[in-house]
Length: 499
Image (cartoon, rainbow, N blue to C red; front, side, top):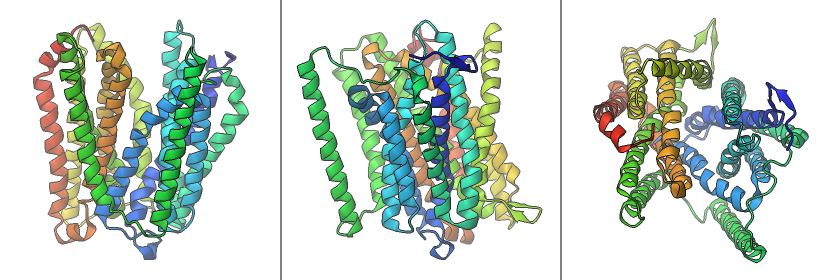
């Protein structure tokens, strides 16, 4: 393994992963900025002309599968491909998806989305794991710092991408925007292969069993499974292209909501009734269930940034700057800036409060995340009163909303994810992290379905509906946040010795 310390005092391989992840996020956030706007834009304006409910459902399914496929993507890397190959294959599939999106066809559009979610599922979970492999176990502090640098790469890509893809997509041609996002991923592939040597042996091989015969049988079974899934997808795509099979995205999205929710409920019932958990472990599993609900609700609001709030930016926000109309997708760069600025500030704040025995307990931070989310949508209610009065809202309303959302995410996401790893029995850590990612998937799906309620024609006839829709989110977030805050001490007791 190479430890040529030439990237801010860290292994040179960190730079390889930093820029690969930056370009992958460039791809993802470029899609996030354009996707729903393209689908609901009229055919005359180069869009698909879908209604908001259908477009929101497709958007929700797309972002949902990005998180859901991270679970099999991580498993395949561990058992079959290895981290390095999974990252490379995933990047190639993402690029193929963007190339497919460059064609002006509804069929190729959905095929492109399929490629991108598969590729992201292979790349996203494994590149983070590979960062950890660059450091010896003894260098825990340096590993944590390395992840902080890597996190900056994520937000750098998230900041740059909407500025480029939104201009190309909204001002010139939607497919140019999708193509630009793919060009970023292609640059990431080139960078990855040119500098891969700095990774040394990290992530080259998957975990192997001691018994070679059993290992060969497992590899054979995985190959058969992959071929079966691949051929099934080919048949599905062929049926869709020939219109023998016609799917309803809205019904699929609604059914997925029930399926994921039901699966999680059944899994927790299995844990409590069949898995041999001690009383202390059951209490901690109960806390994780609460965290799952909180995370689902939070991301149902947070992921409106790419859906309903993106529509608000497009339709109801004054974007004129010295006679030039700013693309609506530019607002998607704002949260990344706030994350970069305030992540460090909050990290300092928690330490400062801890020294004075004032650091909020974990459930209280979770509650704060939901409350900040609710406050953000309260700002949007106020902005909507301007729209109801017949005017367009200033950009500052969205910017303040995204600032509050960022505060909420900083309070909830890292604390919640860390708590899940600590609360889970060692034998169940991987499964419980899967549950955590399912909360993000369900939240993303809910965000897409909720965005379907922002029907332009209906709101034009009854602008008050805009306020009412945001009020729904405010009530859900504030009530949930206050309930968790009220019971935070009891939840903290259930956590036992976990801080």
